[in-house]
Image (cartoon, rainbow, N blue to C red):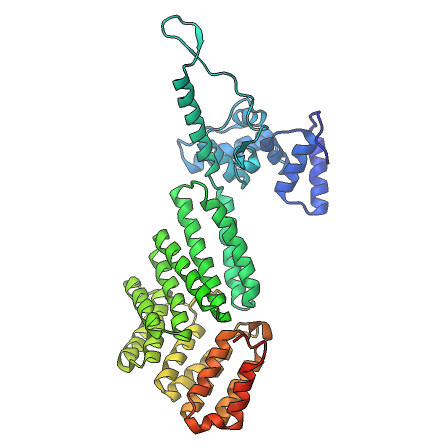
Length: 463
């Protein structure tokens, strides 16, 4: 709809809000429509899009400013009126306050810049800067030096405003990532990568601007978690080089964040690459680093680190040290309170048992492995990812240890085929091959082993 030359009243804005509610517009889309139709500033359009009177918004801004800081920016009905009409331009602190109140970016409020261009609605035409001479008392033009100084100050103020991220925007990003972490547990990895990449593209745009330290820390933490999950998805597909590169990005971001627990968690996740695809020594090194970082108060990350190190050591053949780490892991995990199971970054009981299963299976301790496998499988919901299949494949490896070759291959074949095709990625194929590798030489030629091998060679096996 075209922009009108006249100024419309609150009744017009109300009609636009009603239309927005019927058609499912966002608040930002509603504000944009009011601005274009009614010829208002972005700041005023954002208030009207929310159905707020000047008095309501002014009072709430005043209270919010006081909660943020007793000496924070002055904000009330009169100030807001001046900002909305362009009679005054809010300073950086006031911009941050307005962004938080409206849960919007500076540009969405007409207080920032897009593609290097100023928003004409928010800034009245600048008049030639003049100053009063201390000698004559008359107004004279500023010298070029002083004009440059003032222009530089204004550009710094604009940079500060442009680098401000509304707290609501950060909260929304973190909420989106948390939702993805829950979905990741049962959603096919290809679909999850698209969602994670969208989040990272938004984070990248924010990181390209100057941000306060507190905002930068939150953005790097989001980057570390999202990059880790992308690397994990790539690992499942068998894209080893790409997964390794994304794990490196995740480690870099976690180190930049200064969050010790996150640094340890990223390393534990990255160790899976060495565990499933080699070299196993890299898995041992990364989990050992994570264990050292997690020293102190017991936590899910500390338990995860020790359990992951035990599994890597067992796969490496270091029996005595692996047994010590299993004992340590049980001691740490037993001290933890129950937590959510439905989070890709959680370490619930069923995942702890999965790691113990891998450890006992690698050590050839079949009886212990079967116990934890059965307990773990009983804890998984109907809608989940590939972990139950990994447990059944480890049960098949245990059968291979027991020289039940036919039964081992049949179980591996059934476990592989029971997984929906979009979840049937290279990591399952790699684990299924371990079943064949554990069979005695002559047993690899039996019919069940040949059938399993042929299945893993079929198109669509993602190997």
